[in-house]
Image (cartoon, rainbow, N blue to C red; front, side, top):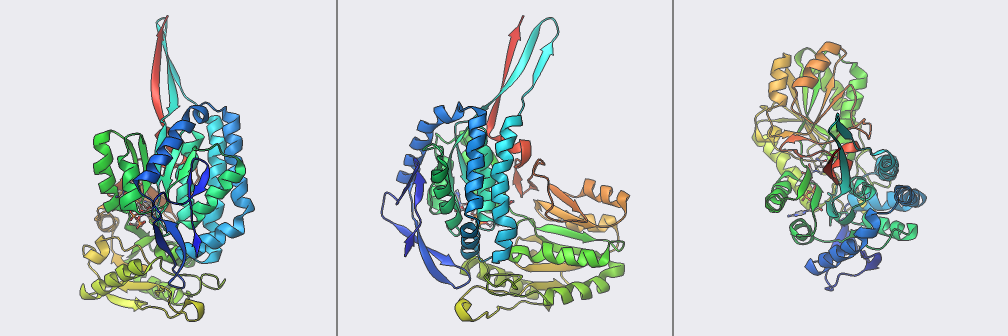
Amino acid sequence: MEQILNYIGGKLQKPLVDSWLDNYEPATGKVYSHIPDSDVLDVEQAVAAANAAFPAWSTTPLEDRMMMLMKIADGIEKRMDEFVAAESKDNGKPLKLARAVDIPRAVSNFRFYASALQHFASESHQMPGMAVNYTLRQPIGVVGCISPWNLPIYLFTWKIAPALATGNCVVSKPSEITPYTAYLLSQVCIEAGLPAGVLNIVHGLGSKVGQTIVEHPEIKAISFTGGTETGKRIAATAAPMFKKLSLELGGKNPTIVFADCDFDDTVRHVVTSSFSNQGEICLCGSRIFIERSIYDKFKTAFVERVKSLRVGDPNDDHSNLGAIVSAQHKQKIQSYIQLAKEEGGTILTGGEEVQVGGRCADGYFLEPTVIEGLDYLCRTNQEEIFGPVVTLTPFDSEAEVLTMANSVKYGLASSVWTNDLKRAHRIAEKIEAGIVWINCWLLRDLRTPFGGVKASGVGREGGWEAMRFFTEAKNVCIKY
Ligand code: TXE
């Protein structure tokens, strides 16, 4: 059985205590590799390596840092097929989705920040006839990057790239559920010649390795993406230590469809925003609000299109949905489908397991599920399910739909489908979310800030926000 290795001090190595975890392939329900069940010893070694590497890396000329990040991007691109296969095998997502989204975005993350570091300007302020102030934006030192299982290498590199670009050294942990592409990244970094200790990847459990990273006194900032409850625990640990925190957490995103939308285009896009990656993207719209005058028409067209989605072997190019990431997560989603029925919902389509058969006979597959008839305040409409389950709810006015959309504790993303320009601006201004898409979804310029409000997290990733997060601003004032 293949053993995934830690990447510490520039070397691939087993956990210092010979303990391993099973790594399952969601499509088959079988263990296909083992990952290090690392502990404090491994994290200590990684922190020591990062500290040792920091003086040289933080003073490496920008041109050389840029070249190194570009080489890593090239290395991922060169091994695209391996990364695509690993991302799909680990997560259960269709191969074609990993090829179209996850891996190209991992390459872009490194290329974007390789160039950004060349243009990351600072500012100076003159006090005429008296003094000049200039702001130094300096790397923090050793930082921690922890990522979830839904977009494994996409989100992992989105943290690591800006951290390295700004001259920090990193101790990171991918999700123990989807470790393989991070392992491949380790190999690419070695091939690219990344200096030892600049990036360290320690595999293992969140409660052990993740918690150790968060509470380690020499790790000065934590960039985390994952569940809201985990985010709370991390904040409780890190805040008293005055660590910088970027928390990208859960969501329960509204999709708001007005009668004047481009109907067919909207139906097609809303199916994608509901079920892409098996609905396991924190940006997916899981509560669909439809203006009453087109509710029945939209419901009919939407359900018909959802029924045509094919749940199957992720390796099959015809599959629109692959496997749910784990048996536990599948059970969680099924418990919410049961709850929806108990809360008075009507299942319009889906709700059942899918027997894919063949090599996937023991895999974790669920039908895309559409539910109507629920109160907007019920648990099904308030709590994050994070799977292929959406609810439909009619509305009669902007005021009503904003009340329903903003009724949840989350505030991550939203999409609004209308051709009324003024209405689009009104809704965008009033909706409680970090991201508002108008007549589109998952479209974003990498220079823009990314993140949520309320229980969806604090801080922003993306663009200059990430460069600022991973640097400390020091003001120097010189009197003359
Ligand atoms: O999260 P978990 P999951 C959210 C998504 C869903 C959840 C799914 O909405 O709620 O994340 O991801 C590590 N100290 N987002 O289940 O369990 C754990 O090992 C330190 C939102 O993976 O929180 C894993 O590596 N680390 C997001 C990582 O945290 C700990 C996009 C996430 O695990 C830890 C993606 C601890 N005590 C998912 N416990 C967004 N807003 O962009 C666990 N971990």
